[in-house]
Amino acid sequence: MKPLFYLISAFLFISFSSSATQSISVLAKHPIWLKLGHYKNQPATISYITNASFFIADNGRTDPAAELKATIHAFNNLPSMPCRYPARYQWLKEQGLTFSMPAAECPKLKQWREQQAIHSVSLVFASGYMSNPASLYGHLLLKLNRSTESKNKLLDYSINYGAHVPDNENGLVYILKGLFGGYKAGFSDQLFYRHQHNYGEIELRDLWEYTLNLNERDVVFIANHLWEILGTEFDYYFADENCAFHLAQIIELVIGDQLTSEGAPWVIPATIFSRLNTATYQGQSAVKNITFTPSRDTVFAKHVQSLSEKELSFAKQIFAESAVLKSKSFLALPVQSQKAIIGALFELVQVKQIQKQTPVKISELKNALIKARLKLPMGENKVKFQFTQQPPHKGQKPSNSSISAMHTAEQTQYTMGFRLSYFDILASDIARIPFSNLEMLDTELMFTNGETYINKVHLLDLESFNPNQLSWANESKWSWKINVGFDRQPALCRTCKRSFVMGGAGQAWQFSNNTLAYSLINGYLGDLAKNSHFYDSSVEVGIITGTDSGIKLKASYEKSFLNAKNPAQTKLELAVPLSQDIDIRLAVTRANSAMWQLKLNYYWQ
Image (tube, rainbow, N blue to C red; front, side, top):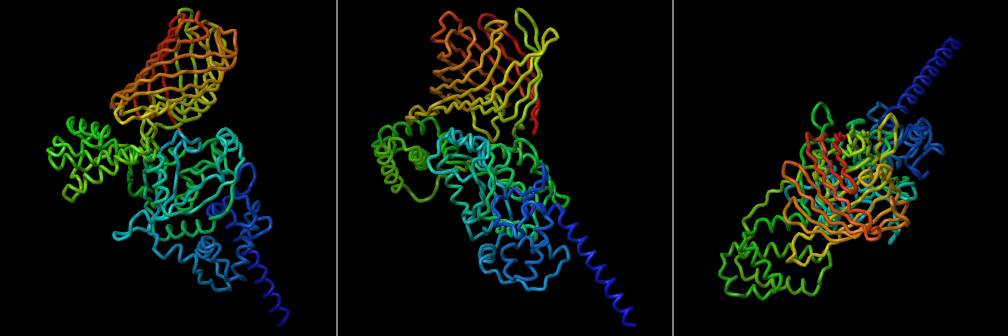
């Protein structure tokens, strides 16, 4: 009987070992396991995480199966390991695995996760910030919500992903390293109020919060995984492996691959929110609700809009001379009007202090406002502002394909265009910086007489017309533009073309919500059309206006200083939106001759 017993035992052992090996092999290829290790599949299996200390197996960064085996072994032999990898432990237990060692208590993890329970998860979009190259596209944060009726939401956790950039890094160096992977990056956690203060109060950026419709298990799972990866390092790439990509992949742990496309050459925060709005979770929308938090600048604009003409007149007088607060005419106003004026000026003082403008004058005005407000009855102004800013998922998609017809006195030409990202001056302003332009890799091919030419390659085209909205408030914002690339200039001559780098600076003045005028001094370097020098300069003036329906018009006039013989260039551009993803453009350019262009744009992501 003994030989038979040994034979059966050996058979059972071989069967069990084969089954276990097969199970590990299957689990090692499971999408959740690959996401827990942040593995990418193209061009070869390797983790985005670069520091070896994150992995248990020596070859864990490149071998998910080896990392899984090492993880199981660690859970069976080291009781502290579930505290280091709580999401791995949670998921493997849910797959039916049991471990010989009981899990430790994990006091640090419990304090971080449960001292004030995390009950939901949000993704937060911060609008673009033209003063920082890292924030031109906006920024994405992950928020772990712990607030209750008695606990302020500013005490929630926020999870940030960003590059580790040295202090006072040169802007050009930052852009180059950011594009080509010159920085390490990682996740960090802070109380949310720090980020809200920085974005909304310092950088004057609006915030949209998308609260996700997740159950308790998935909220805990996301929190557990964040605990695992805090302090890990990644290579940072501004275009694709950025905050939007890596934070979206955290959410994909529980909703699947609905937000990112591995191998995409670019990932933009607004794109993630567009996809998130259509994503599903357990048969329902993945988004539970959307909350808007205005910046200090947006709140101030609302205060000003709420003032009557008489109240606004007093606000202007008080800003010029704070002694008006003690005048009989001001004190004769109804109490609610006095509160409204003082409230608006308080907001203006906050903005001025952020911008560090005329600190002595602003400090004196603030003290005078405080004294005047203390003399009024308690209670806030009864006006409740309704903000109409639209969330980012309702904006135009970032990439563009176009077809157009161009007509000059000599011929008719046709073009096909492609723009990598993001928006131009005539695009929708939804969740974007009004009166600004941010285009990367804008290209056009031209077809005429059976031949094909490159009509335009603009590598980078930035414009920021920071308007001086309130002349009475001594605003002094600079407008600026940068453009690098190649294009043809058929309005100048049939064969005219240029390869150039240009920059401009000046001022802009806003007259209404939709209208501004600007004036710039521009400088050019490169192979310039009809120019015997490799440099030139010009003066440019223009107006940009639009309607609430989204129709926009830009008219500009530019005259060269050095090429006095060349005519000035006048340009008129009209954009008419047909839907969220389609618009039609009409452009008329005149120099030596007139050029008409009719273009159809399709926006996608």
